Length: 392
Image (cartoon, rainbow, N blue to C red; front, side, top):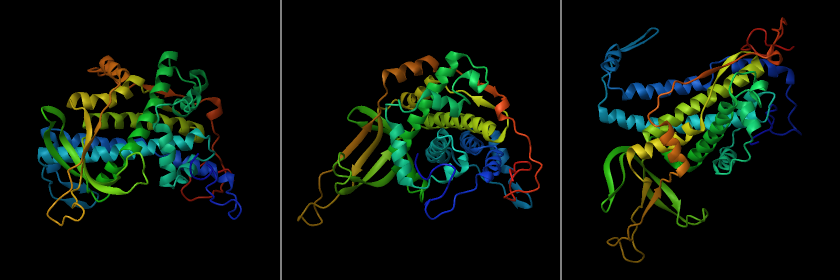
């Protein structure tokens, strides 16, 4: 577990007093009474979809202007198709990272069976520790993510019977594998594309542009909208402590892959949140299943549709040659990161490509252990606590 011990929130047990466990019922009720992070992420996903749509209704909506309470604003002009495409690429890049990090942080906090997950999430303040933990999940070896842990956090129990849900065994096992692979893919995305995300988010210094077809010789290796940013990379890729040089990198993230992964992340957080909400606040809910094929297809759909084998291209910024004065430059250096789609990924893509199955919501009913009798106490720790959640 990264950060401080879940449910405590104290940085030094020798000097800080122990938090009162009686307050956890109020904190848990407050945390889970909200709709959950997946609602916010879905609203942002819908904003991307709205911006991209060619429907005439979108322009009519913008013509209505801004009307929020007493605030009134003039109509907003519809952006050009090119500007909307650039926005969608940048926003989907940022949203995928934001949503993925939220999923991982919630997973870290809930898999340890913390008494107060809100405190556990809030204690994950070290970016370095988070990255180290995320890198463990990015590896191909997922044996440390046990089926019991995955099922308990995302499905409500180690088995359908324990969770109290009506899910066939085959669908249950497939969904466990789907959630596991999604965690791995998200961790790999976050740790491998951190520089791209930072460029897109911090100061908007990642520059989106349509690059048309990018060819090496007669072979098209990339193309479409790419995001170009500057970064320092070690001269020796195998040694992160080696001297660094400036490079200009153009990444070609796939909009289709990003949006598909964001949708799967929303479903995963939806399920995790409803499981925790039932456990800690006594509310029934629903689950949303994720298949293993869906996660693999999400990674494959973009590169296959874009017909490109390269994820990003980098060029070292020119430098003067030693002792030659300002008129001579060092040789141009180029590097590229290839996209690797394994046979399992391609087979998954073939199995579900073109399908349009509706998202299935599975009832998550209250079990006897989840039922809570509202408190009639007039005492409570916090002004924001929901009525009946106090234990004092």
